[in-house]
Length: 135
Image 1 (tube, rainbow, N blue to C red):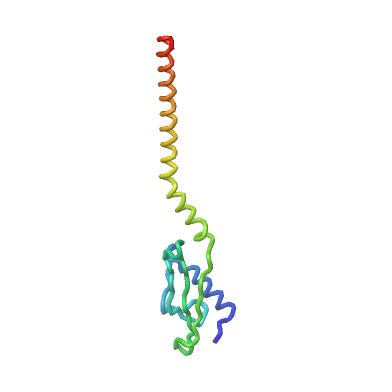
Image 2 (image 1 turned 90 degrees about the vertical axis):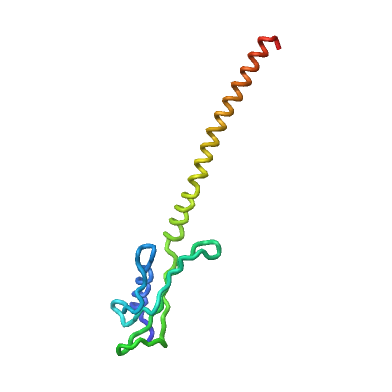
């Protein structure tokens, strides 16, 4: 039994909905709504692989015939990348990590301005003193 386009659509929607970061997960052994398929298992890989986060979302389903799951006809449904996981979260995380560096940069700039002001004042004082001695 090959899933039809409508069933593939149901699988796809369910995989995207089952996002643990949004408080959802796959319900193994549950019949998918509006279909004759049961969820066998689901994964959500929250791993750091190859130096980047991997949020793979997938599930395996099988048709149910006469109340029995047909394990000989498995379908694997998976979610493609969504723009939130690709752009929003890494950018937010990077911005959070940059906050201490930006604060340090501001503090160093303040120190540099204060140091520069003191050096200029010291040079002016030394020049004034030298002038008093005719140097």
